[in-house]
Image (cartoon, rainbow, N blue to C red; front, side, top):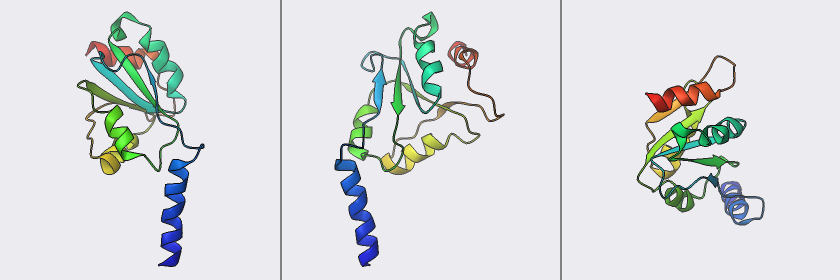
Length: 130
C-alpha cells in the first residue's frame, strides 16, 4: 500500500511540475469545424495542412505528454463543438482510446496509417474532401 501511495504521489507531483506542458493549440479552436488531435512527428504535416484552403476552418491540438493527463484541462480543450479527428501512425488510433479512457471523450473520426510510412498531406486532404 505504501508503494502504491508513493507512485500516485509521483503522478500528482509531475502534473504540478514545470515538466508537464498542456497540449498546444494551433489555429482557432473556437471557430474551427474540424479539429485534428495528434502527437509527435505528425505535427509538421498537420500544420502544413492548416494552411490549405480545405483546412481553412480547421485547428490542431498537439500533445507533447500523453500520460498522465490533466483530465479537466483536456476536457476543456476538447469541449468545443467541432468534428475531432485523431491523426496517428497506428492501426487502432490509440490516442483516441487513451482520451476516451482517461477523459470520457469519444473521438470517432481518425486518419490512421500503419504501413510504416508517415502520414502525408495527401492523406489529410483526402479525408477533408470525403
